[in-house]
Length: 461
Image (cartoon, rainbow, N blue to C red):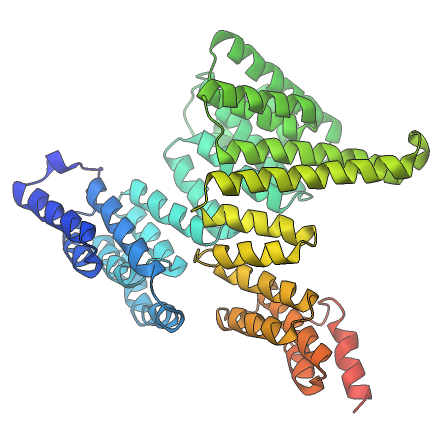
């Protein structure tokens, strides 16, 4: 199955697409989705139709109320078994069932994942990528989805995208040596492709006879890792001398950052900005990351050895203020430049919260909560803000709303239960507090101090 454009289909299909777009423009979203769904089920590879369908589904899903969203997530569960049963032998039929579910509510990672699996079986990896990328928007830290997306990119021989994904996974597990090795392998493969080092076989086979493979596999040799980064930096600098590529410059900046060469990373990212002619929020965040890492490195050195510098207390205060002011300045400017981007509102809210600017944090978390991907986290943070201001009744409302959005007892749900229990404890409602602490205790006895909390309640009768 290969992607198709409107010129590749019949005039009747083009006319139906035109009518669907007009329906969307008239804000008749449900009818537009109905028309587009017919086209996608018949010709799933038709790219403009898929794009318009997703656009209309977003509009519909963003406007569904809380109870409606809950029902929209529950209803497809009845279809999941049928979808799974048809993925292997009838993948196109499975794709149709998935599209029907998404037409009712788009933000469903389970259905999107099944659609991706079905698309791969139907030999439509471009649809699998679309679905996995949308799942990543909904849950950016879902490592299973990230790895499956990376697998598709590997099959399509797109190593640069694989590198970006493993950079994300690596940032989630900064001390995991195995994941750092996977990242280095992905970077090496991307470099090989850039240099047109082509040979048959999978990416490990391509690495096998290369000198870099030795260092990539020695996960416990830190010196070798540093040498490898330096080698890659030298190679990218040589490439830039021959071809002033923006992508190569971005990769060079990322390597500088990985190698803790913060000033070089900042300078190189700024060169990227000059090259493209505008400040992309993603690049701005990378510049910020480098500057914050530099500040944290200096702060860490002072804390570890105050004698290394004159007036350590003053310097510690100055660098901490420099770091915090910079974080606030950059997050504020990004949010102001893109006021309708709720993710940037969320980023600013987190900075406000970290700096104890609670009223500002509340304002921006309230805006960010309009983004379905950030609603849960925003509810939890809003609860924490209200609790810090001793507005415990409002804190409890936010935590309970957040709790209602979660089913699996994962890290985030345990966090929500803990904050909720603390809020009830402060109101004097010991029974409620005990109930929620017990919920955590029965699942994870080692979570924070819940074991002590529960024991105290039993000791006190």
